[in-house]
Length: 373
Image 1 (spheres, rainbow, N blue to C red):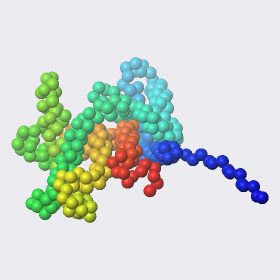
Image 2: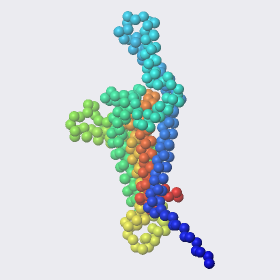
Image 3: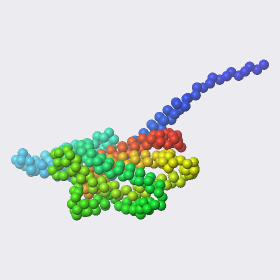
Image 4: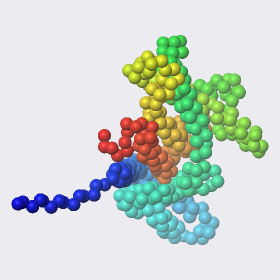
């Protein structure tokens, strides 16, 4: 008589919660590593481009030689020294300055050192730019210009985003109406950048009508009273903010309006209308909810754009923000400032992309973080 086979012990299966946690952990770790590598590559390319293959280092070496030679020649303490002694002392001081700046090292070593300092946000000192307080620290220069950019870009971009979103939703309900056709007709006006409208605004409201200032942050000298200072700041803010707002207004409305019309023509929307649901319920459940991931994405990228500034618009209006700072740094070949501004933007963009994956999973049940497909 055959004996029954010995039953094998059952293997303990992982619980669904454990599998979800491991999947989420693997995805998060892989995503962080991927974004970090991308940021490192972008920063290193920025350093190479900003340095122009060593051309900026050559300019720095020449500038150091001219500056030190002039200091030695004009210093009263060295008047009694012979010409040969002055030249020898100047050469020694130049070599020390070159060594201090790291210009005696190969290009690969210098750029690698710049990369490590950039990743750790050790931005160092600017080469040619100074802050209003006289500091050459890149961090001080950026922090000094940051509030002006946040004020200008925040007021214009956030107002543009929410105004165009709600107006587009309203126009999508009235397809083919006068305002719908008006928006379509005015959409090509958004092909012009903000600084283009800014020049016309300056000519009309500042040069001709003389009701708004030409540019700057506040009047000179700045008012000491808090209320008058805020009023002057508001007057200087109107034109640059309006130019950025109007340059993207009609295009944003047209884009969102088309987006809402696409979703409002889906079969499930027609089914909801047949069931007798109100227009408000149809919009909130069947139109806005499916478009929420796209709205979140555009809003997140709008927030990132707030930190970057508008280079030409800020320059046209003499607005002391990050955009004008970057324009000045490029003109002065100030590599630390250029790299520092790029680093902050790269980190903000990477963090936003990382967080968007999880926000998508919250607002869209079809998306699973680390789900593969």
